[in-house]
Length: 529
Image (cartoon, rainbow, N blue to C red; front, side, top):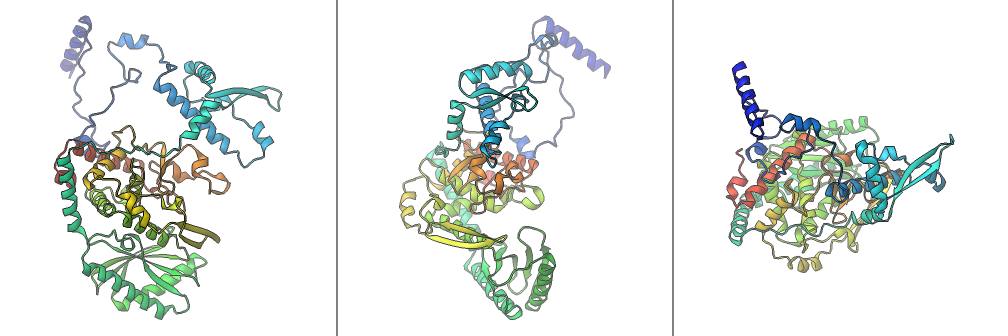
C-alpha cells in the first residue's frame, strides 16, 4: 500500500512540474447502491460538465486554496433563476397572509434576511441592488413596535409579470423527431402487444357476473341499507388487461358507518355473507381513505378489490371522466395500455410497497401529455360547458362534480393531430424524462393537472390551493411528484418516495435514450436489466 501511494505521489509531482493535472487513482471499491441498476447501466449522455465551484478540489491544490468565492453574474441564467425563486418566495409569503385584514398585512411584512438567507453573504447586497434596478423587487422599510427601522421586500413590476406568466399551459410538448420507419415499427409493436394483453369476452363476462352475484348477496343480507355494487377503476373505464383484478365498489344513499366500530361490524357481517358463495377475503385494509377488501372468487377464478366509499361518488365520476377521455380518440387506450405495461415490466407500478407510481397516476400523466401537445388530442373536459353535474356529500359537505361528457365535437378536433402511437410513445417519454427537452416537465416546479390542462406552478399558492380552507399548504403537495386529482384536487402520487422517484426517473431516462437511438422495442419493454 505504501508503494502504491508513493507511485501516485511521484506521478502527481511530475504532472505539476509539467503543468498538467495528475491522474486520479482508480476507486477499487465503487459504491453501487445509490441508484437502480438501470441508471448505472445507461449513464445519461447529456450530463453537464462539473462546475468549477464544486466542493471537490481542482488541481493543482494551490490554485484551489487561492480561488475567490464565486459570484452570480448579473445577466447569467443563475441570476435569472435566483430572481424567479425570490419572486415565487415573495408570492408564497404574501398569499399566506391573504386571510388577514389589509392593515395587518401591510404591517407584518417579511424582512430581507428571511428571504435571502440561503444566499451567500458576498452575493447578497449586489444581488438585491441589481434586482431592484431591474424592477424584480422593491426594497422598502417600516418602523417596528420597538422603534427600529426594518427592511422588507415587495414584488416589483418585472416580478409580478413573471408570476402572471408562470402558470401558462405548456403548449409546446415536443413532437417526436424519430424516423418514419422507426415510428411505424414502434406502432406495429404496440398494436401486437395491446392485442396480446386485451381481456377476452369471457373475462369481461366474468366481471359482470361478479357484479350480479355480489349485488344479490348484499340485497339479501342488508336489505335496508340500499347498497349498490358498481364497476369502477380500470374495469369501469375499459382499461383493464388480461389477468388484472376487478375493481368494484359499494355505494349507498341511505346508510354510512358513523365510526370505525360500526365499519368493522359491517365488514365482518359482509365476510360471513359472501363465504357461502365461494368468496374468500384474503386481505382487509380498513385504515386507508377508502376501506378495501381483497377477495378471491373461486367460482369465477377471479381476484376482486372491493372498495367501500358508500356515499362518496367521486370515484365513480373519476371512472366516467377517464372513460370519456378514452372514447375521444382510438389512440388513447393503446397508449395507456403500453405505458402501464412498461411500468409493470420495469417494476415501477407498485406504490404500496416500493413507493413508485400507481396506475391511476400513470393514466393522469398520459392524459395531461395529450392535452398539452402543440395540436392537442384531448380537450379539457372540466373547462368546457358542463353537461354532467352531480352533487355528493364528502365529510358532511356538498361537493359539485361537473364536466362535459358530450364528446362528439372533440373527436373531429382530435383527428387534426396525425401522430402515430409510436410517435406519441416517444414524445411521452421525452416529455417526462429527466434528460430534459426544452419543453419537458419539471418535477421540482410543476403540478400536473388535467382539470386545467396545464402544469401548475408549485410555488404559487393561489394557483393550487384555491379550494383549500384557509389557504393551508398541503404536505402532499411538496412530495417529489405531484399529480392533481381532477375533482378533489389532492395529490394522487403522494405515496411516491424520494428513492421511488429516482427509480421511476431512471426508467423513464432509459426508455427515452433507447427510443432516441431507435433500439428494438422488445429491448425497451424487456424485464431484463
